[in-house]
Amino acid sequence: MKKAYFLFFAVVMALAMQSCLHDNDTTFDLPAAQRIDKSVEDYTKILESADNGWVLQYYAGKNYSYGGYTLLLKFKNGHVTAMGDVLDPEEQATSEYAVVKDQGPMLSFNVYNKVIHPLAEPWLGNPDGVQGDYEFSILNANADSVVLQGRKWKNKMVLTPMPKEASWEEYMLGIINVKAGMEVTTYNVIQGNDTLTQASFDPSIRRLTLKLGQTTWDVPYCTTATGIVLGQPITIGNKQYSNFVWDENEKSLTDNNLKLVQFVPKSHKSLDFWVGEWTLKTSIRRRITLTLEQGSAQNTLNGKLHINNVTYELQLTYDPATGRIELPGQPVIDPTYKYPAGIVLIPASQQENKLFGEGKGSMYFTWNEDTERADAEDSGQISGHAVDSFFGVAYGEDLQPILNAEGGYVFAFTLPKIQYMTKTK
Image 1 (tube, rainbow, N blue to C red):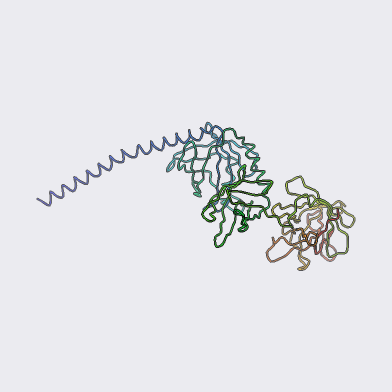
Image 2 (image 1 turned 60 degrees about the horizontal axis):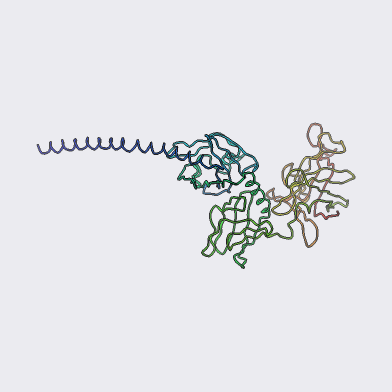
């Protein structure tokens, strides 16, 4: 009887526990869902309450492994208008957005926006691109800041209100000007009156690298209208530095008593320096000139190569970070009309007796202050080989290289063993 009593008691308690659990689910689940609904509503109101929009310091790459971008975002009536230094900093794009329920409130740019979405798009050969997000968990939000976390790559970033009187166009112009001024990538690091070390910026991946003693920093940064903001501060002594102001006259970045001053080596030359007539020194005893003028595209040069009483038009590029110019392989128009499909300037190695093919390899010209000439050197693009020459290969109607009687290529002109060039005008 006693055993039966305890068995009956256990069954009753089990049923009671199930009933209690069921009641608790009903009690807590519904308010939790309601809380998320209210957060979605509240966060939407907060996002749309900023009259002049928000500034977002956006960091890409798993564990902040890539660089930083500055986005301006204005939310209104279910749409977002965006500008940013992603592709074209002067372009605006408007698309739909939504604050939706996920495991919590989530900001979703659910319709393609050509300012925002390129950060999350794949590249050729790189399915993750720069590892950016277009959906963000909203961790916290108020009128002063909205804390976001990328849904896929988990980087945290913060929206802060754009000042009401600020112009979006002027803000982006400021970013353009800061970037233009920072094109030289090496900086002396000065704290007070002491030069501590050198730092380098890589504008292509938007990262700062600095080594001091046994400590190395490799951090992403965002460009602002007045300077840069580091994704994480650098600590020197007992002070942290992260928000630097750009001084165009001094070519420096300053945060309190820490200054990063641009270091320009003697080999660095401006684009204007390369404009003019140059004489190429090759292994053949013939006068060859290359006349350069600024191209229509940024950081490009149009070249006129004069050889064998014929002038050929070439394209070169200028690297503002190093101050040198680059000559790549490229198609060349035949001004003599001898060759039906024109000419292809092909990088080569005379030492190896090897042509590398169009689009493979190039040569740099770097100014040498001591010898007052621009030294030619291989760009290092072809592993295990060095470009030291260029050959103008002639092409026929069948779009194939023209061959001579011995079965070799016909050359419209040759630039064998390029050594340097000197400025003549």
